Image (cartoon, rainbow, N blue to C red):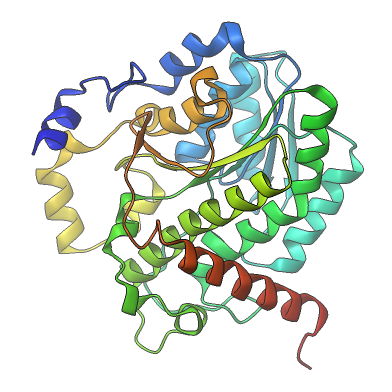
Length: 330
C-alpha cells in the first residue's frame, strides 16, 4: 500500500526522482556530468518509450544508432530528433530482432563503422495475441524480446568492453523489462516451452520474455565482474505507459481496466525516465545486476533473483544460438 501511494503521489525515492519524473528532467539534471562523444544503440526506437529515449539522449549530445525493421518510421524519428536538435547525429541500420541472421548482419554493419559503443539499450519488444514463429522457428515474443537482444548484446559486448578500456568511461547496458515478470511462476518457466509453447497465451509469453530479460542481466553482470570489464548491466521497469505494447492488449479487460486506471498510466516521457536515468546518471556509476523502477533501485521477483535459474537460462540460450547459427536444419 505504501509503495502504491508513493507511486500515485509521485513521491521521490532516494535518487531524488519518482514516478512523475520525466526523461527531460532526469537527463537535464545529469547534463553536466554526461561525457562528450557518447554513442548509444537503442532498439525499439521508432515509437513510444524508445523514440523518447532517443530524442532525449540526442538532445544531451549522445550519438544515436537506431536499429529498425521499419526504415521509414526510423527516418521519421530521425527527422523529428534533428528538427529539435540540429546537431544531433542519428544513424539508422536495418534489423529484425526476431531473426538471428538479421541481428548478426546489423552487428557486422555497425562494427564496420568503427564507432565506439558506450550505451546499449535493449528496449524493443512485441506482444503477440496469436502464436507466431520467427524464421528461426522460435515463438515470436520470446525470439524478439529476449533471444534477439541476448545475441545482440553478446555480439557487441567486446566492442563495449574495448570502448570502456580506451576511453575510461564505463559502458552501460540496459534491458527494458516489466513488473509483469513477477507473474511468472517457477513451474511456468520451462525453456523448451518458451520456444514452442503447447498452450499459448500472449500475456504469459510477454511476462516470460520480461523475466528472461532480468535473468540475462543477472548472469551477464556476473560474467562482466569476473572479467573485470568496465561495463555494467541493469534492468528497468518503465511503468505502465500507453504505448503500442499496451494498445496490443485489445479486448474488454484492457479497455475497461485501463479506462478506470487512466490516472495510473505514465506519459511516454515519464516512461522513458528510468531508462535515461540508468543510462546517464553518475549515481548509477558502477552499479550492475540491479533492477530499477521509477528511477530508483527496486526489488524484482524471487525467481528473477535466482542465480541458478539465470545460469541455466544463459547456458541454454548459448547452446540454442550456436545450434541455430552454425548447425541449421535442412
